Structures are given as C-alpha cells and as structure tokens.
Image 1 (tube, rainbow, N blue to C red):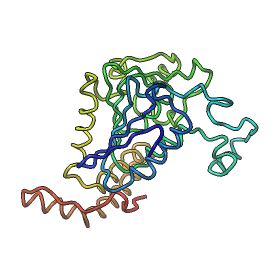
Image 2: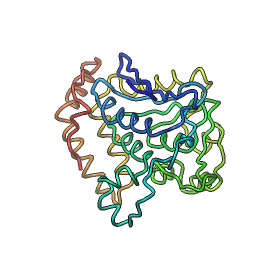
Image 3: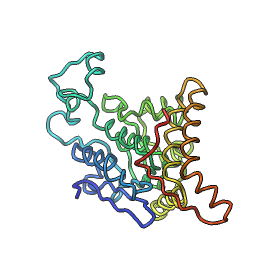
Image 4: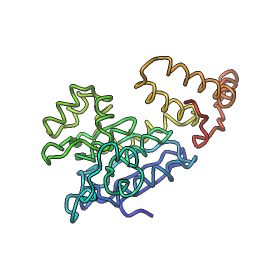
Length: 287
C-alpha cells in the first residue's frame, strides 16, 4: 500500500506506523512526506483506529532528510521569492503550496490535528526531521540506543516541521535554544533529563511498552472525550486568558454530558465497563 511505511491495527484499535526505508536508515524523502500526510489525514482518522504508535524499521527511527536527492533536496522551487505577506495570503495555493511550504511542517500539522493519542517509539537515531516530527506526537518513548539531534546548524538551515512551536513548549525555551544552538547529538538519557522523552527502554521492550501505553489510553475510554481533551490541552495551554479555557471546556462538558458522559456515569454506578458509542470523527465544535 505504501512505499516507505507499514501500517498495522490491532484488535484494540492501536495502530503501529513504521517508517520503512531500513537500507537508508528510514531517511525522510518527498515520498515519505506524502505518505505520512496521507496516513494521518485518512487511515488514522478511521474510527476503528483509536491511537497511533510510530516507530522505525531496522536500527534507526529516521536519519533525517534524504540528502541524496537531485536538485533542491527539500523539494522547493528556487525560482520563487515571496514576501511574508504574499506567502501568508496564499500559502496553501500554488505555486507556494508545493514550492515554498516545508514538507515536514505539513506532516506535523497533520499529526497534530489528529484527535487521538499519538506516541513515538524512538528506536534509534532520530535527527533533523527524524527528531522534529516526533515533537507533534503527544508522548515520546526512547530506546537506550536512541540518538536525537536538532542538527540544523551543521547544515546552515533552521529548525522546521513547526518545531519552533512544539519544542519550547515541551522542554522550555532555554533547553530548546541550547539544543538548537549546539546541534549536538543527544543520548536517550540526555533527552530524558531534558524532558524530551517520557521514558527510556531496553531495545526489545520499547515497542511493546509504547503499544501498551497507547492501549491504556483507549480501552474503555470515550474517543470523543479523548479527542476533545487533546484539543483543549494544546489550545488552552497557549491561550492568553483562562476565560478561553472556560469557554471551550464548558462546551466540551456540555456536549459530552449529553452523550458518552451519560454512559460513563451509568457504568460507574452499575460497576461495569462502559460502552461508549461516540466517534472521534464526530467531535462537537468547542471553539
């Protein structure tokens, strides 16, 4: 189905997405970019999918952009020279959509928009886009063999894939700047100490741990409540005033109290497992 990815969904709705270019250390190219977008905008939005775990095939997670491509390796149109105003006004239209927009950013925006838990299982080297794509995922677990690098300074380019938004929110501005300025490769333990990853695991334990964590999030849980909670935490954590959180959580509480919330309360009182019927594809608007 895909050239650069594999996709499997288990009985609990936990999908495992594997970056699969092992001979190239799963280096990111334009084909992988398109396929990752497609997965997160279509396959992962199927209501049978409850959570997604992302890992790499072989000994790497993703060794960054494939720099062996001919021409502009980032797939950008070197003939264009838009002003910031021109680009903002028409960024999703041609020629800017394919000629200027960062391909990694399109992927991370698709990941971020998915109303379901997304967990990175970083099994080996993850540098450049291999590191920044994981920032849009909700939680990161790492193998003891993981090596993570925001190495853009070594190549004369800048952090991409919306990482200037995600990274400071995850680790704080001081740590984010140090890692970007130094462009050093981090060990799994350094990434853990900097709060980039949740936990470090033996290589053979990493993927099962990530899958089990995902399963614990979705079994006997409302997909609607999870999807709304993800939206609320990301949006309201960056809101200018707590009133914004109050308005959105009021609407979210109202709509869930009429649907899966009724079943959740009934199940609690009856001392039984809940039978939620809400769908992540049908979230009520709360903003």
